[in-house]
Length: 356
Image 1 (cartoon, rainbow, N blue to C red):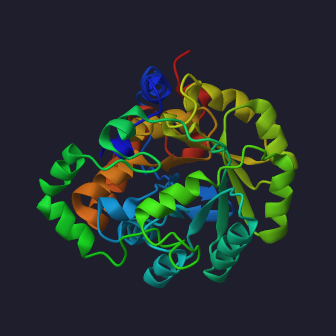
Image 2 (image 1 turned 45 degrees about the vertical axis):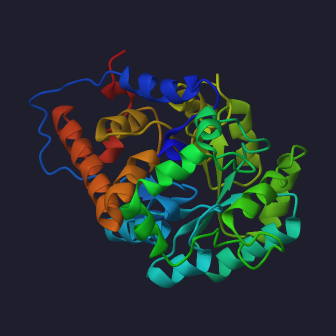
């Protein structure tokens, strides 16, 4: 769990994501006639019953057997998008075979453009309905918890690490029953990356510090469909994303796992929304743990909220059933919050719903 829960360095940005959301006060309204509520929202032209997206979480298939498939099925059942990470255990093709509706695919820029082009082509063949381009991984922010646990690049195998793994036989048995035990999107395609350890070493060599907005144009040539640019934390970058042809942007600081000391995602959301206006959909990621958090982000202008750790905990506990439970809990909390704030529909949620 340390890998999933950790932030970079001192984890101040990770903590700020949670703290700043909780510090936003919601206006309680009474006798407002808030019966017959619904949470229907339109996201990238598609109507869905909840204003939620399951965001990309790397290594989900190591949290629970076939974890990406389990999460994708739960999202499909809930009628919301699922985003498959480049760093997934199950491959694009594995997930496509397991669900009946299109899902989204998250892409990292890499130096090996041939591999990137192949990933995009595979996503198109699998009928992925949106490409999510994560743009804040030019270098990897050090996560001290990963260093202590041995989850470094390359990994460090310690006696303590082996002992912890051996002490969890049920988890080991669960993961071993999964379809894959390595990175499914890379297996058999990059020589010398036959296992998790060798792939993590390879991916570390693929971070490209020379990336620029010109590279987004290259992605656009490969992908004609809906393009979401994730990890926008600055108004000027948001405007550049609009110019680059993004269908949506995600205000996100990578869950506090990259630039420690950066602002919380929620503190940047209003100014980014104001900067782009109606030119592009603005989504939110970073610290969502409850339906109240979803309400706060929607009130500050987000079209949809991305869940990461909050659904991953459910996945770790009970696979697809756990993810479904996590979604249901957040939806129920959002419904109660809407009722007590005197709100019937998602489009009625605005900054007026918050205390100044």
